[in-house]
Length: 174
Image (cartoon, rainbow, N blue to C red):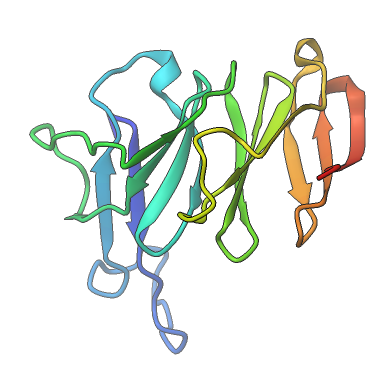
């Protein structure tokens, strides 16, 4: 595609037996949405996670994190299609988003970035604030930042990898 997009593809039923590598559109329908019409490097999506059945959260090369409704346009994007408007934005990292993960039954978003930090956001509407509930620098950004992050089920400890810093295990003091 010429534009940054989000695609949603329906899975075939468990009893479906593929006869070729290509799945028919009636078996696996797909929907798409354009994220932007711009072609600036910082607007390129670098990470995505399903926040719920109705929304996805996308991280960008420039460090931005935005939530979008799930795509509703059947088929591939077209040149006439307008970009989807973000339904929400989160405070940006300083560099490319490397990973987004959802924890706590969909109530916690964890983001990692090449800036060396991870952030934890509460997605629960009642508890939600625009600022992260945790923002820690784990890895030196000059050595590659945070490449991967894993959290415990309660999001009280984190395991991260990045650059030449190796693997770090941290606990959230809260």
